[in-house]
Length: 268
Image 1 (cartoon, helix red, strand yellow):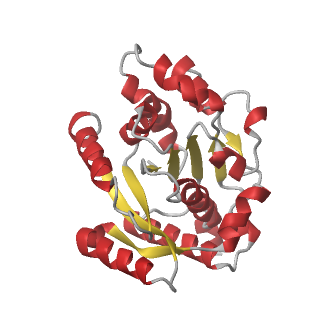
Image 2 (cartoon, one colour; image 1 turned 60 degrees about the horizontal axis):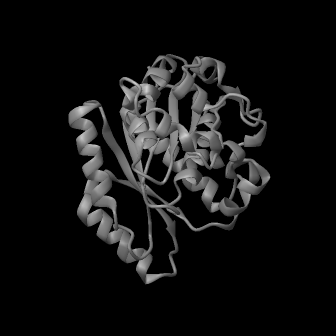
């Protein structure tokens, strides 16, 4: 069974989509079968791996609202052999209203994704910057959650609300849900403030904070405009190396074996 990991924080601009795209790509580059799920109406994760959201016929919206089989929505990214995409569309904005009267509305994404866990080593869900029904669906479907926190002023603002939401979901909707880790992003070694935030997060959350810290990096900012992850834009950049290190840290933590093809290559 593959692991489903949601990347969530209701605060915008903390690096959720950047993390989702580049973590998924790094896992795929390490030969782990990976599915990137775009659960944000802005569809930035979809465009970030080379698809124009306007050209998407069926998306996660049709899967959750109309009950279309999730398998029929998945598309290959064509940029990395082990990376697939479940795309999003602006229509997802209206999904929360349309799902209000549906039975088990908080579990629609879980119904779609859990059967896919047998086909993938990792499923990474890019959540929208809110704690609405779509994000609740993602957290209900996930086995764990990564919380990106930027190394800036007000970094911990709203984090308590998110952690409280996670506790509610753990008690009522998804007893399996764990915090995979808190990921520090947008780190600038030159700024005293960045170092203070790192110290504060590690003091408060200790083992929950990842060892890997994602730095501010020009290549990370550039790669979405090319529709590719940073590992394909500049594999030697600090951003690319950091996300590869994060991927390795998650693999080691979960003790996941690579695909059979990789295992055969290693034996040879």
